[in-house]
Length: 254
Image (cartoon, rainbow, N blue to C red; front, side, top):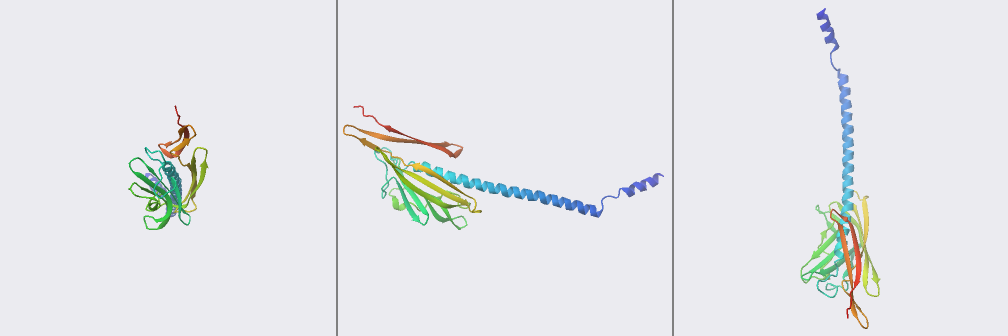
């Protein structure tokens, strides 16, 4: 009797059939495929989002750098007049470089050396020698440089392996009052992802050029109108910034 029961149990516990194993394997492969597809989709989405953030951040940083530096234009330490580089007629000069390409150039003097600067858009090449239009920044403190030396030999401001410039345009408007004349610059920068040109961003800023020294005269007295501008930004986010200006008329005590 005991021997019969053992044979019966052995017959019942014979394991999985080949068909059951094939079905289980197929279900497992389908599950792996679904998980892999979801992972790849999430990876592509995250990678695309990171490139979009790179585009936004780089354009914001470029305009922030441009604005903060242009506010120095015309400064001349210890002098009684604004600094204008040799060959220029104003503290800020706009010039065209060709079709849809512009350059803004300026200079300031720290009391020791001249700082000649420019921002411009121009075709260049990336690390693979592929032609790409980008925003360039030129800076030099070499003595004797003038307006003929700007708007060339600059370094890329944006990551030219990832981004390309659609438009870099500058318009100026004269602002005049009874005591001073300055310019309001409107600068627009449009850029896109090279891997996906349909993803682009357009940003613009306005900059009021400074009058570092403006004498005010009348029949009986002479004083000065001083323009003071303070620009600041968050240390951990340069795109969050503010700029404030005040005017102070010096007194004649006699």
